[in-house]
Amino acid sequence: MPFKIRVVVIGFQPDHDPVTGEEYTQVNLGVKIPMPSPPREAVFPPPPKPMVWKHIIHLFVPTSKWVQQYSMWQEYDLEIKDNGELELKLVKET
Image 1 (spheres, rainbow, N blue to C red):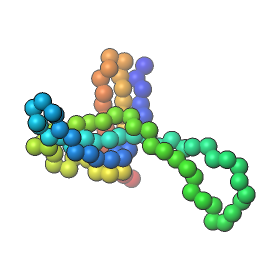
Image 2: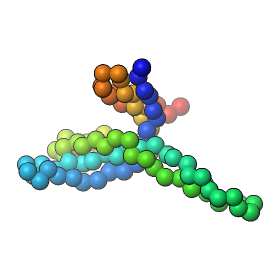
Image 3: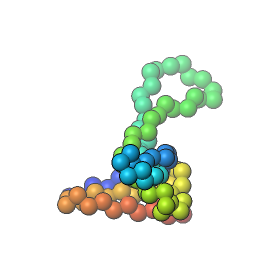
Image 4: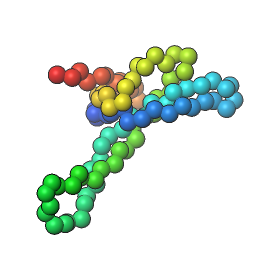
């Protein structure tokens, strides 16, 4: 049964292959994970809820082919099929 999850572009990083010297742009996709916070006294305004980003997948695009295909905080639906195929679809803003 296919598995589908909403992922967000959470970072970019330059990368290179030490053998060939080819340069890449690494695109980091992740999901937001809320962290439990200890009980505390009610204050106003409430403090932001602690959270972390869990990396789900990293894409490596050759720098020569990089044309700003991805932007920070864009959302995608990632589907992982039973045969291992991946499908990444941009979530259209409404």
